[in-house]
Image (cartoon, rainbow, N blue to C red):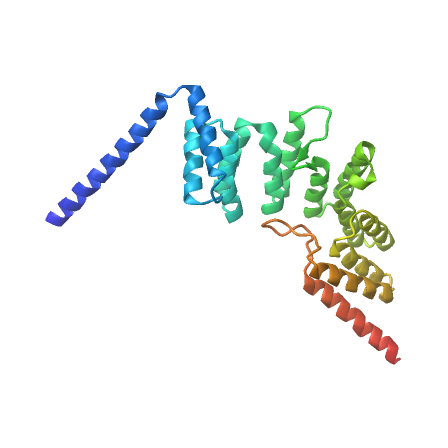
Amino acid sequence: MGSLQKYCLSLFIVLCVMSSCNNLSNETYYHMSDELRKSKSMEYTALAGLIERGSPKSMRLLEKAVRLDPNNDRAWRELSLPYLYAGMIKEWNENITKAIEANPQAWQSWRAHDRMYYFRDYAGALYDLDATDTLTKNQVDYAQNTSVDFLRGVCYLGMHDYPKSEEYFNIYIEDERSKVGDKFIDETAFLYLGIISLYKDRYDEAILYLKRGIKYEDGYADYHYHLARAYCYLGNNEKALKETEIALQKFDDNNHLQGYRYEALEQIYRTQITELRDVLLADSLKLASV
C-alpha cells in the first residue's frame, strides 16, 4: 500500500511539473507580439531545415513553429513529409491539410502530387488538381513544375481510363508546343501514350509515340523495352531483340523511369526486359533450327 501511495505521489508530481512547463510555455508565447511569434516561427522552421528531416529534434522545432504561428504553411508542409514517406496517411493528411488551409495556392497541387504518386489515390488527386485550377484564372497551373494536364493524364492512366488519359496528354503536349516548342515537352507523355497504344493493340501508333519520345530523351530504357514489345506483337523479332539489348544496357546505366521513394506508374524492372529477351532468343533458335 505504501509503495502504491509513493507511486501515485510521484506520478502526481510529474504531471504537475509537466503542466507547469506547458503553462509557462503558453504564457511565454501569449506575451509575444504577433510579429515576434511569426518571426520566431520562421526561425524554428529554418532551423528544422538544417536537421535531418523526420528526426525528433526537427519535428519538435516544427511543432513549436506551428504553435507559435498556426498559419505557417511551410512548417505544416514539412511536418507532413515524414508521415508521407512512412506511409502514415492519416497523419500526413492532417498536416498537409493545415498547410493548404493556410496557403491553398502553394500546397493544393502538392497534395495532388502526393496522393497520386505515393498512395495511388487518383480520384483524390484529380479533386485537388481541379481545386488548384479554380485558384487561378485563364492559366494552366503547374504542380512541382509539372502541368496539371499532364498529371491528369497520369491519373486517368492509373485509373485505366485510356481515352481520358490520351485526351489530357494531348492537351498537355499541344499547350506546351504552343508556349515553348517541342523540345521542352516532358517526353514521358509520349512514353505513356505509347503504352496506352499498346494496351489498345495499336502497335504501329505505339512505335510512333515511343520513337517521338526517344527523339527528345535518349536515356530511358522504358522506350526501348516497349518498342520491343510493339515489334514483337507485329512479328518483327529481329528489331524487338535489338531493342531489348538497348533497354538492358540503359537499365544497367540506371537510365529508366523511377520514382523518389515510390514506384512510378508503369515502372519497369530488369527481369521484365530479360524475360522478353529470352523469349525472343528462344524463338530465334527455333527458326534457325527449322
